[in-house]
Length: 432
Image (cartoon, rainbow, N blue to C red; front, side):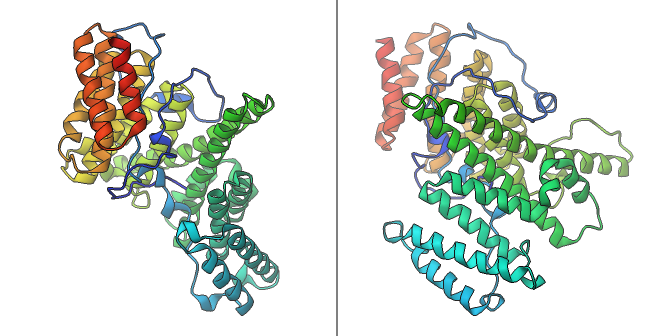
């Protein structure tokens, strides 16, 4: 479900959320996110250098494979040993694997999906009388997760959404899906069985994947709305559902973390707080830093894409706090932190807070320069250089802006990032 950070030097996918170069609109969504709680996480002070109504084309940069893979371990339920499955199911899984577990050009996704769905149907039928194959058993829910994944790869987002909803219902029940606080209380129960806790964490991953898929379907409908007027309503409805499920995930994580943090404060004879410290050492042991930071990142990029900067900015800041701003010197953390800073620079540009955009750009460039051969650092270096050009242009330092745009265009061209090169070249033309 969540887009996990991944240690890789591969080029960013052109379909990755952060690989998109977009002009941000100012449409406001509705949703169930606790807006006040998220806003209260912000430490940013607005000090605008320019009219906040100025529109700039921002460059959103992707982690090489990283953030967009968040939650892979959060929702994927691995298949159990072959001996767990009846022979007819094993045969279907073998046939599905032969169609799916191949190089992309040789995959037969429709065949794989057919076999996985048949295997799942057989297990569900057995589960009505044999608890070993109950519908919420990991080896059964693993098949549902695989069905959702194959549907997504086929572009069948309707099927993927149906599968993710089915998976959540199996893991939590209908009542458990409605209110995240129910799962918060369970997670905070020290006597909770380990397998039950893992089930909640899988559900958390699944809910994030569901939010991502609603978001993707909404974006697809939005693109089609120019020729299909009814698609706009569908896009808005899907965006609302994405907001609902991102909010569900954030509420689950943040309420659990806040309660856990205050429990530790009391144990140490310290006062409780309404906002935890966001020191990675204070997270519950069952919330790895990667999971929390990536969830915040996913939700923040969703909010940014819908011009909800007041929600995106504090999430990015707190994710950066959990990464300790790359202060540990680890290459992966340094480059991930530079990506987060590139998005914070973008939020500054979008909100007209150019002082913040300049500060994040300079700090992010200092990190990105440390590992120029890392794809994440390289991508963020291009975006941050471009962002600094926007700051200089908006403040009237046109020659400095040209220098930044030229450097961004040259590096983007040399690395084969055609979209970024085009964007920077257009900026240079504008200032010619």
